Image (cartoon, rainbow, N blue to C red; front, top):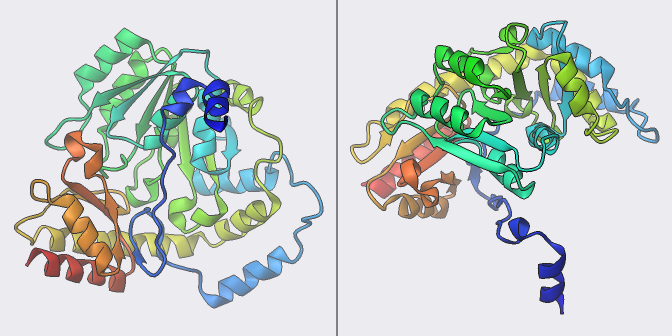
Length: 359
């Protein structure tokens, strides 16, 4: 009965999909999800809690989050002529973008890339197409990208900058060529921009089809789920028609506004993470059986020996360290694992456990 009901009412695209899995991290050192490992100092926490006391949770939040938008514009140096839309994390913004497209529109992205581009596109019956990255350095295969643009005329192209899960930064001039060739929107996803010191935000007025997406998750606010996208006002106005009212709750608005008043704290943490990233990269490459790739994000992708990734992943988990096993995805990610940069003691625990496994 229930199986017949499910197969009858749900689209075949949904039935054939797998839910996005979140690994259980209880009692483990969590280095799998690109989170900021640092919590706020106690004095900052006390000030934040004092702010929350005055939050009118009996009322609906400001539907446009005007004060928060103003702070985001200021902190991120977003051009004043731009439109800006907030989302419940970047995931909701991606969903809004793709829901706005005509049925069957093409969506293009390099592969490997952020999995939600494909996941959401396919759930909406859109024509998702991917272009493989170059094998040697995970760079864009620009001729193939241009060829795909001509062939599919994508309504949206997603470019993660830096890329997830590879951690590299695509060449600026190549992204500009894509912007010039594309007849549709080009979304530059800058989730990891704070660790790369690179951005396309200052080019929004130069390219009418450019949208830049960011999140506060990697700055230590993953728990409040807040992302934003900036671009041409006319485009943002259309996306706002789809955005659900009150999608950014009052507690998130108050917390994000408060946090952005303490940008120096996040900058300090970001600098520490970048410093530790260099140390972990060097340590990984000291193992003869490991090849770690340069990264401008807060994680490092590394390749193990052939068919050893899952064994190493399980060995680390048995020793109390959780990272991300990307090898099951296959392709250029075969035999690859990804580790998030944690606090120094967490990084040491990871390296020590890896050393024990590889010895």
